[in-house]
Length: 506
Image (cartoon, rainbow, N blue to C red; front, side, top):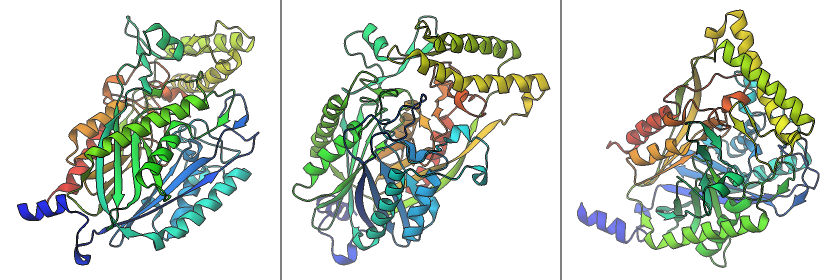
């Protein structure tokens, strides 16, 4: 047994045809370029001002015997909309004649993108609506182009499938991100803006996940067929919601540089999978720009490239895939007194902000960057006021106990060789990802948020119950109660149980 193990480890590319890996893979990518004036996610209707480059999407098909899983990885954010994500996944599923459940849409969560539809809806504002109740997506021209190219790209993949061995490594990158959840001396929390970072010392970063994992798929000739990258940070370095620019930000830049290094002279496609970035930003939010994004992308690519010296072959072949249902616990509604006070505070804030009062920086635990105009701050608070009005109305009707006690969601768990991937329909806090990594029975686990759709931020246990923007994101829903402890830890528990099942000896 030791001899066989040595042969696989030292010479994984010298297998005979009969011993060829079961896992096969094919990957291609395509670009979309919207026109200036395109629709964005801006809360004040700001349109695309500048197109600094195309937005790339990589489509990767994995096959093991009769099982297929397809990953769609756009350098975008808007495809996770509740009324466009199903269309994207269905388009690929129908093209490849495979179950739509096996098609995973995994976003970089890049904020400098555009809306594919003119009537974009997030899962958090369609809470408890059945799919049949969602508005049909109204594709903009660039959205139509996206779907057309997506189908054409997916159609080519089956003919390109080839056996591969799975290799992996983990780099380190601690220069481009920071922990965006600040804590005051009184125990309250706040969204840490760039102006707050300035007050905490030179280039403050706090507690961030510095792991930069890389998974490489090689064919029998030792050539790289494709690769998956992973990192944890909101890509917001060239983002400003009132001055929209279209650019793939540092994740796309990193993938481009890495692809050139892995396969000089031959084009390959590299995917980016976003980690549990709920409480982690890239630096430069509202102050950076395209050049800083390019710099960070090169830095991240260099970290992946440096890690290649420790590239390891998987001891396992093939893939496993499962979809698991998880019930995230929800808390009771706030008291009537709390709701009345918060509504009064919000109404006063909105009135002053709309009048141009620049002294509108904090409201019901939320705090707003000086780079946002008072009008934008007012729009953000107008989005959360309806939640408190809804909750107060339930209190008045005596129906506060009728709200759901759990949010039931699907997570996706995929094994590729020695690598486990967990997809979550949230913006999870990094504590959730750390639990998955620490408890994984596989050598490498990639916890990924922003999969298929997003129900908004999901706190881990210790961060559940706070009032800052991310931890109290239920305010932006229509209408979901707050999370209760242990919050998103239940997802880590289920993911680990599934991964252990995947590696259990048959």
